[in-house]
Length: 256
Image (tube, rainbow, N blue to C red; front, top):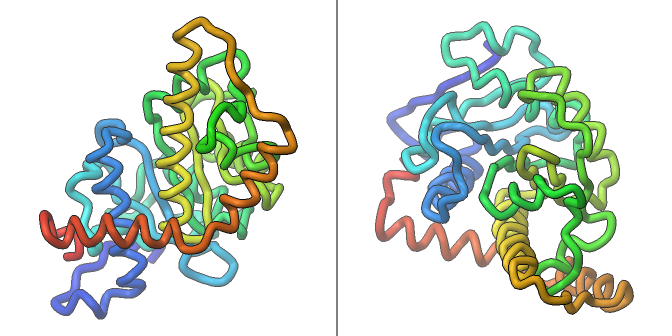
């Protein structure tokens, strides 16, 4: 069966339970940050060695309600995926299926239409320049811009977008006229990048609003700072751990 919607009495016996909890936390916190879009947008996480099997949110469920047991287990190589009773959103299958099929280093994939990142994606020049410390995280090849939006992310569009992630140094795809897609090795890494990209985009967009000249960092300092942030120990993991601790106190149902 291509898609499994799992419910078990003993939740910790769910396949990939801890990974499910991490993803459920990311969904709920993204909603708290108002970075979601109604019942659209999707996160996925590879759970096997070649990345072809992955967890993803069910079709048309609000991020703020997603629980660990709700997540679908999908095989990117199964052409019958969209025929089952718990089939994912077709655009989620088109985009995330193609990435997990073609880009094994993209273990966790988060796609949102967050406001400031989407404003950036709407500019003729969608590059995020190094104007502050946060934006240096995405300096150089760490960001790639999709200049050729082709409509909803059905399978052909997903295949096209996946080809833009071939460089393993890429962390964020700025999807022109669309939004952003962030990748990472873990939920913690991808979520941390998504959070900081939106913050950096907000700073840049608001700096543009002033109409005054920008103080842009030199290439050397931007690359140095990006390397330092790439290697900063444990920050992404601690970020997600703190968010789970807050949810454990305030809405522990996300673990169900």
